[in-house]
Image (cartoon, rainbow, N blue to C red; front, top):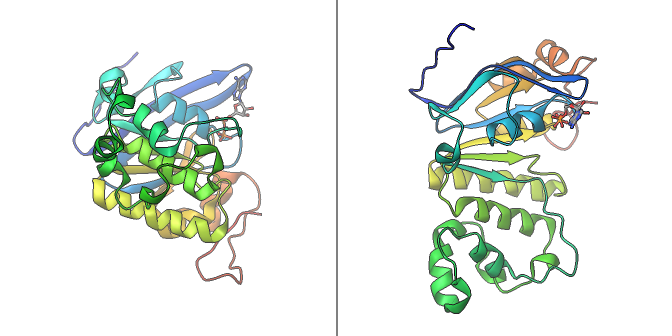
Length: 262
Ligand code: ADP
């Protein structure tokens, strides 16, 4: 196979020809992705387009059948994965889950075995950086299982920041969050991006969110079928390619710039 050439310079993610077959389905059919450092970008695609599979590849959980991925110019492995944070779509919790927010976050602090012997003040000092701007200080003592969707989402973001990642991957970030919650969520991400100087990848099937919040959009459907600014990708032709069927972005009455696929 010809050697794949990479340009590590300014890229947070670079993939070439990534292929993954699951069962009988070729889910990824040659994904070429170039995500510059330091931006908020969106990876969009309809259900079944391979978003989760690609995320799993980026997190080192799924090995591609062919092709290569580099993060910050390095092959995927434990070393570079330390620089990556992941915010899951949801945390399945039942009411019997007894940890408080503080305890949950403290468990995720790197190198703090035995944290439970120390005072809250000391734990909170270690959490401070990750908590900043997330408005969680007032609920650190609350049980995780009693939080609202939005609060839990903020805890998951704080949790992903504890290892000081340079790349943050957010899977369907606003699933289970209501519309006003969605708006403040994106304001929050913008703030986290600014404060921690991260590359942020928002993974979503929801096109409405990319308009205002991503500087670049990648549309996936087994391959990256179009990429560009939100305006370029949201043009009906590109979307048709991405989503396969008739797609008409149109304006709802809940504000300009809000687009949906129906
Ligand atoms: P998305 O996250 O965009 O919805 P996925 O990456 O989850 O897409 O899945 C893409 C396709 O791969 C879907 O058609 C799904 O049915 C299929 N798929 C996912 N996991 C498996 C598996 N373990 N075995 C067979 N097919 C799978």
